Amino acid sequence: MRNRITELFNIKLPIIQAGMIWCSGWELASAVSNAGGLGIIGSGSMYPDILVEHIQKCQSATDQPFAVNIPLLYPDIEKHVENIIRLKVPIVFSSAGNPKTWTSILQKEGIKVVHVVSSARFAGKAQAAGVDAVVAEGFEAGGHNGREETTTLCLIPDVCQAVNIPVIAAGGIASGKAMLAAMALGAEAVQIGSRFVASEESSAHLAFKNKVVDAKEGDTRLSLKTLVPVRLLENEFALRVQQLESEGASNNQLADELGRGRSKRGMFLGEMDEGELEIGQVSALIDNILPAKKIVQNIWTEFLEARNEMMSWRVL
Amino acid sequence: MRNRITELFNIKLPIIQAGMIWCSGWELASAVSNAGGLGIIGSGSMYPDILVEHIQKCQSATDQPFAVNIPLLYPDIEKHVENIIRLKVPIVFSSAGNPKTWTSILQKEGIKVVHVVSSARFAGKAQAAGVDAVVAEGFEAGGHNGREETTTLCLIPDVCQAVNIPVIAAGGIASGKAMLAAMALGAEAVQIGSRFVASEESSAHLAFKNKVVDAKEGDTRLSLKTLVPVRLLENEFALRVQQLESEGASNNQLADELGRGRSKRGMFLGEMDEGELEIGQVSALIDNILPAKKIVQNIWTEFLEARNEMMSWRVL
Image (cartoon, rainbow over all chains, first blue to last red; front, top):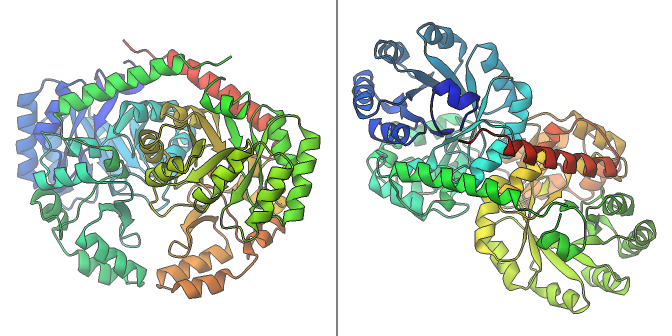
């Protein structure tokens, strides 16, 4: 497919695999890029030397474009940026921070920069900071999330009105039909997280992948809203957080309860009761673990079929 | 357009105006039905004799099908049902209660019955109760809402998998593009509320209509979650409720704060600070008050245009 996003990234299909902590290393990113989409290495859970290793392995595993996601609040961000530039990563997705600081520095090196936002207001700011595109991520998305709680269905049209640069839709998308819906709203590509957590190449712990496959409607909840909103799969830890929140706990109490390293314990080490399990609402619709290539193919085939079916509607 | 929903209701366009307390009387319902969609009288805020008046006036104003929405927890529901049967209303949308009790009684009189749900689980139960179709309403919708917080984008595919009867999408839909998105997900019609609140024929107070037009992203919030979840537009009352909730208030405290008659005070009498203002997230995308006929026409035209545009995508 040709549109502004596939041309910007020089990819075949407007299907982007979200950069996710503990889940998207070089194996997943290269598999998605090799399948015609855009794979993204999630650097938020990597030390600088680990990111270097993942970039180099990704470059060995694919000759297609791939990206690195950097949370802009990452403590050692200078080192990440330095390594990304040195190793000639072609595309950076930034999130969780102000895109002003790094966008032009990266772009001067020929790197395309995309910023993740949860509101039309922040999309406008990202455009003003000079980014090449934005990801607009709705309330249903897994992991960290906006305070406005705007769902993808309401967010995409609002962001498309607010900016002229291309918009990538995220949150609630795991199928070709949802991809078609997002693009009907004006998005030119989709960013997909949860579906790729349950892929063979994902570095998530198998226990977490299986829990994603088992998840049913209502099993995730936007939590820690006053601290930093994050969508979590229900487990003992998440229920305890909900209980604290319903009792009006302070941010200090919530931060104490969260502690350090919970996301690693949950998603990477497989502690299903006490770990932090970040996943989207759409996990309710994910029923198997598949190779990333198959996921990309299934989504694209279903997208084309759904578009054809739309043509068969009896509109008089 | 011909599909199961337009055939079930014998209407031209799969555009349904939601039955809404204080906003959708006979003027709005008949205007939507005359425009080719399905208008719905919202009986939840009407005494039985008032509903009779609205049904009769609606019948005088249109020879097209229209419906009445009944919240099944309505205290005087027997009288509403009796009047609906006696006056030969062709379609009933039921919500907020168990569809088992009334569905077959209404259907024996030749009335089509549709039930509003917020989850695939309840959709299955509604189908088992024999309803002719379901409305699946997502988290972004205004007014009363489900506890699962599932967004329309995630809910529609899940409900379509769970039932064989036709599915009507609701929540976050105010434009032809959003209608196309919902139908790409498998819905056969859309139910639209907020957009019709800001119509000339809506019985909402003008101050409320203007506040809907002014609403921006993040201005609504799902509130009173532990009591009965409802999406409210931010005002002094709503902020006070949020404050109470963040402090861990009990349901008794919340019910005391809510009191009685707040929705009438807000939506019908125009008390913008102290009334309860029920509206969807999509209010952020509504910028004017239009005649209902024009709203239906605009949505349908944009729907057809968006579908045509989809055909022009460069898919190789």
